Image (tube, rainbow, N blue to C red; front, side, top):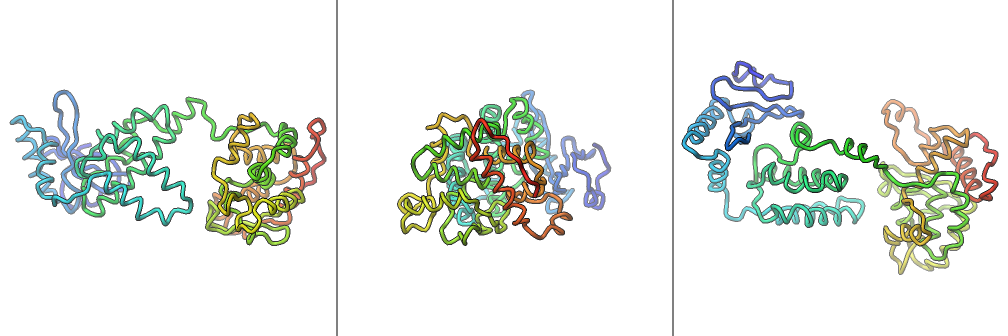
Length: 404
């Protein structure tokens, strides 16, 4: 959009968009959704439109931006590509020791992984960068990488491996942001989604919806009594862990990292640093859960973890392996959905009790402020009813449910 440019009017801009300077052809001020402002020079070369970053406003003044744009315009008329000219100029100003993307990203992960609550996060960061980003621009210096490089990484997997690609984009954005803070690159973050890559790539949610993709495969809740009967026939500590997880509607990591020191009578208290919402979660244990703990004691002996192998928690794939051995097409996490469906379809327990049992956060800040308790007694009745359903005869799985 066209607007008369002066310092005050530019400073007061609060609407995201691209503003054209009528004084110099191709000079624009790009106001990002976060309201940060960048000068860009837009030009066409060999039939393709390109952008060159000229610096951020107001550190780069209107006068300086016009001088840079004018030089780019003259260079373009003489056959020079402004992007290449800028790269050469920037490279000349940088120290020889500027790290490559691979070097910087590897160091960044090493320095930040201590803040992650789960070791698998570091593995996932390394895996996605190693397999997808490093082969494309791992050896490039940080300031040499632009949107074209990022798209070379993302486009081949955006439709086929959407979740992986989306997470990888977010990781790239964080790394480039860190590099900018350390003054190893400047200009627009090439992995930014909103107002940037979203103009080129389809929304991940839209892609998943068009594929009919579901979050987690889950059994119909009416099959649970038969499934649980079959599960109780399986041998090994992983089968016990899976049954315990289903009975208590837990997340995988909550069970795998459970310790004996967290159990007090018929109450399991999960510390806040292990919960997704970072808030302590009390779990009322039903009779069958207590039986499982008794059996697990013979496996773990003196180990600190309840479900362990040689004093180490079971691997993330241990319960999935049980499902595969049983030839069940479902995910471990999907049993939380099964529990929620059963509560809604077969009981008169309130949704808030079910959500509290699942340790879901309350989206409304106002509601969260008033709801200070954890509904323990009502959740205890709910989980006892869930246990009764799970242990019922497959052919007689309709039971009388009392409201909490």
